[in-house]
Amino acid sequence: MNTFLKLSDEVANALQQKKPVVALESTIIAHGMPYPKNVETALAVEQTIKNNGATPATIAIINGKCCVGLTAEEIEIFGKEKEVWKVSLRDMPYVISKKLFGATTVAATMRIAAMAGIKIFVTGGIGGVHRGAEKTMDISADLSEMAETNVAVVCAGVKSILDIGLTLEYLETKGIPVVTYGQKSFPSFYSTESNYNTPLQLNSSKEIAEMLQTKWALGLNGSVLIANPINKKDEVPFAVIESHITNALEHAEKQGIKGKETTPFLLQHIAQHTNGNSLEANISLIKNNAVLGAQIAAHL
Ligand code: PSU
Ligand code: MN
Image 1 (cartoon, helix red, strand yellow):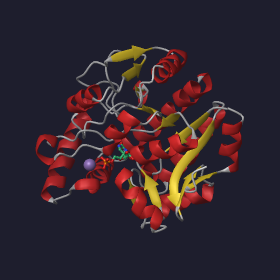
Image 2 (cartoon, helix red, strand yellow; image 1 turned 90 degrees about the horizontal axis):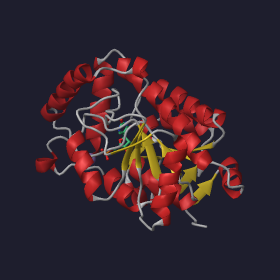
Image 3 (cartoon, helix red, strand yellow; image 1 turned 60 degrees about the vertical axis):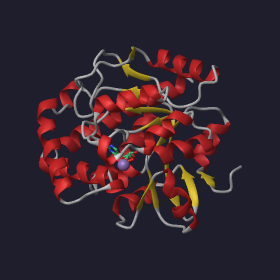
């Protein structure tokens, strides 16, 4: 086995016995939500996965190892500690060789999940093509990773801090299927709707699992984006969130926020300016995704 990989006993046993395992990322804990809600949510999501018959595997970099399956104490460190790196693919060799704390993004989490043999990964939202990317070229490594690595991603659609249309185009170019669970509209994270229809729709976890198996059996490498709309009662309507996003983007521009700081800055700004409403929506949708992810993993 890869010497940089360290599986918890729980995860190693589950994989050995071919039981369902669901990967989880750590950037959402360290850079996506404030303390202590981040830690509470991470633990609640793990519990939700267990309640639905699968083993959770939260992934992060600790002391030179890609850790798959964290203890509650380790999750607490990632939620609290200020000196945690946000690790996308390009940061992995630096953070691992320097033995720093690294919270993994969707891209890095997928790669490590694949090393461990995990096929399903649950998160809130992926990175994508940013608004204005035709000038900044800010396109998340999450998308190029999804073109390559055979780990399916369950999320709540694409957040409109990104250019949803361009992100869908990019996914199409890279041959990444985008399937929405149970509805025609492509969801936009906080809202069940966006201004886009979903390219594909499936209405059960079983059908989704069958599609994943078919894709990989055909030798078509890469991910499938599984968009799971937030529960209607918890959503923040599209128009409401849009005004906060416009505001956050203006502030980012004024303060010269660039590169890897962009996504965490926007997320934090929106959370602050929606009186925590967006945070509650975020927590609700990720638990909702955990249920679907565990169900799909069980069918695989
Ligand atoms: N979108 C969210 N919450 C998040 C992220 C994105 O709604 O926490 C995080 C994920 O870890 C994602 C990363 O992989 O941000 C993307 O960062 P970037 O745009 O710098 O690639
Ligand atoms: Mn970026």
